[in-house]
Image (tube, rainbow, N blue to C red):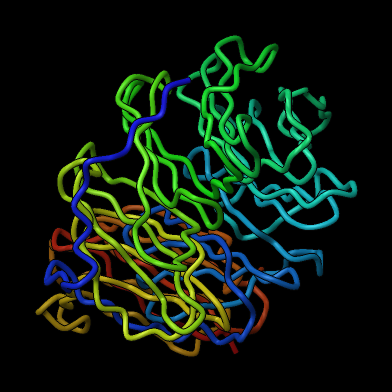
Length: 394
């Protein structure tokens, strides 16, 4: 496979004014390795020692979720707004069917599993060390090991449809492999001319793909023809990159770091030029998620969660929109609307499980007898956006 030097402008000496990154309080010192957002406000993070965190307020606050494991978790992937998978050490795969509120172990083994990619709630792949790649067609009840023509670890997966997919990782000519028949056979499509360690893959369409690396002679590679040819480039001395994501065909982020600096690069032209953004962080970053062109998140060492973008609260006070009483509540909770601004509500426990939901075109009285004592989160969908209020059951 032909490899061409990439004609690319890397603006590492300048700082982008596109976004301001702010550190969020995660409440943990664990290494955080994966992040996914279901809505603009609701997101999930995974990390070491079985750490799972969930937010309902766009990352302003995070609550721990029971993972039922203590292994290190390396990635998270949601196939729709309910079903998600997380992968980790000891061949572990976790599954949620309730937006990350609860998790079940659906696979255990030996090798570390680095990433999952699912096309439907039932059909997907996980990849890991020493060429371990597994496929399930029944939502994780059974797994089939598939041969990717490589004994080297596979760190990232990206499937465009049930037939065409890519795996990247550690290797030489097998650093990136491609299947066009749903994993029956694989073609080695990248010849690095030396060792490479591609940690993350992302395609914006069937032709345009990107890969970043944490080791070897190449830190970034780009294809315009579905992997037939690749251009490659170094982006800075000793920088390791761990995640690359795009929000559309032009704008993307790549994160990683030096031993003493968290690095975020942004492209606005489909990967031809990259500009360094100011993070203020002295620790590497492991994953990034782009909610929109304006809002993104990155996670890293020692509980680091960064958020980009300006966040402006709704101008009208909550008390002018709705009366919520009593708080603390016991047997019943009253939601009396004072404005047509509010459309609907959802009530969650602190593990992220949705307990109540409905429209607010009229006043509501919720029977809460079955709820245990503790803290809950009420989300209100308004014409201006979402509002969140914490409630207590006595």
